[in-house]
Length: 84
Image: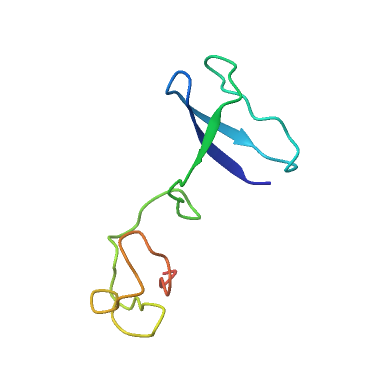
């Protein structure tokens, strides 16, 4: 079940919500408002610990080229990330 991050249009607080169903009500934990906008959140690594910088040696972009030369992979992209 995914955790989504929302921005409250009423108070400006950011709220994380565990979404089980698309019909679940989403409310701001700070003020109780239902006027929320879904944010695009960054993902974390599987272990939660950064082991090296991005891009790293051996990483490839979606098209198989170096991430620094590819137009399809930007900062934070995990496309082609070498897991070790």
